Length: 102
Picture: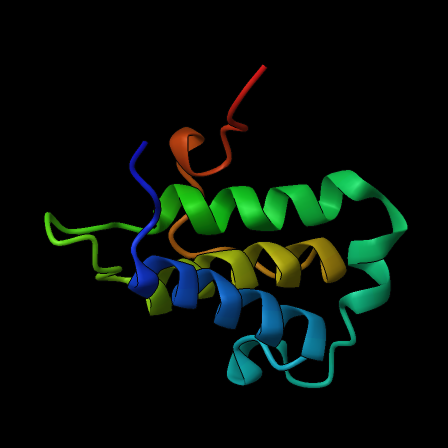
């Protein structure tokens, strides 16, 4: 069985750390304490990780090549969730928000 590379695991670890620490994309989410909203319903946090992992690209060597972009897209979703007047640009494509699994 193939496992995620160390680089991908580190990318996910840092994403989870910034998310839980309240420091994900400080420019976009400044002065927004999104953490209570994410924990209120499981599906909110689920969508954040869905967007991050759907956008994250891995090269042939198993390296995450766009972790910053994946974090930014997840942060945009959080911002829109917490502030419905915020316009996501560009709007999310269906594949970005598609849940995996059964």
